Amino acid sequence: MYITVPDQERGEVWVSNIDGSQKLKVATTTSGSLGTGTWAPDNLHLTFMEEQAAGQPDKPYIVAADSGRPHELTGIGLVIQNILWSADQKSVYLNSLSGAGWIIWKENVDGSNLEKFVEGCGEAFDVSPDGQYLLNLMAAGDRTGIYEFSTADHKCISLLPGVVTFGARFAPDSKSFSYAVQSEGRVTIYRQVWRDGTLIGKPQIALKLPFAFPLQYGGNAYDFSPDLSTIVYARPSGHADLYLLSQK
Image 1 (cartoon, one colour):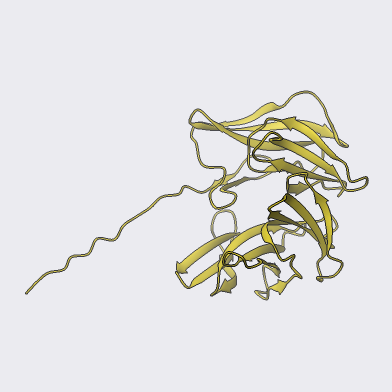
Image 2 (cartoon, rainbow, N blue to C red):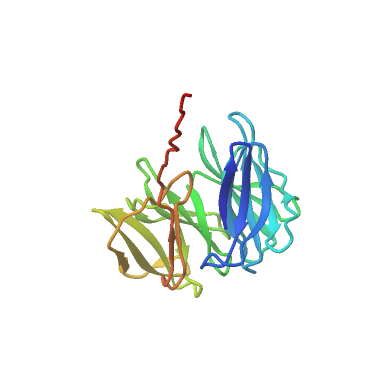
């Protein structure tokens, strides 16, 4: 899923195969700007946000990639940074940022039962396949690092303090998670063995890329497949149009 901006008055959400084929536009907006969310476990439904002007609450949406008919969620009246699916796909977690810090909300996919789920445990980036844990990140400050949040007992636990990254991903078998670190002109992806809320051993290098790219650029600027066979990243660049005005 990705965002295009055809002109200053329009933003679009598109989906495609990983090689860029079978592109399909699933949403368009003429007000505000758009932000990508996440894919559902069924690989069909996805979330995205319509970002409003300063002081206005963002609008969260769910859409089926093959329908192009977005369904607006209730919303939380705040700036929304990401929307994640629960493991059973019956609800979503909404990351919001307020003056007091990060708040994660939970809401049913039909827009009912909106509740403040956790406050002060960073921003959630993934949900364990069994639905028992959120994998969270504190990106700055004294509490920088990767955390887990137990959905059963509502405990926030520091896993890897001091790690500076943007994004983390559980393995499909729930036995590890991976994250990327940028340093010295390269990006390294680490894998941490993990079981049932407990770390096993230390992080190991899973993949070294001999070049660098931003982990964050107006949101997440990269993603990778669980087996690390495919890396997708943004390479921000600018261009200028040169015009010739001739006088007769």
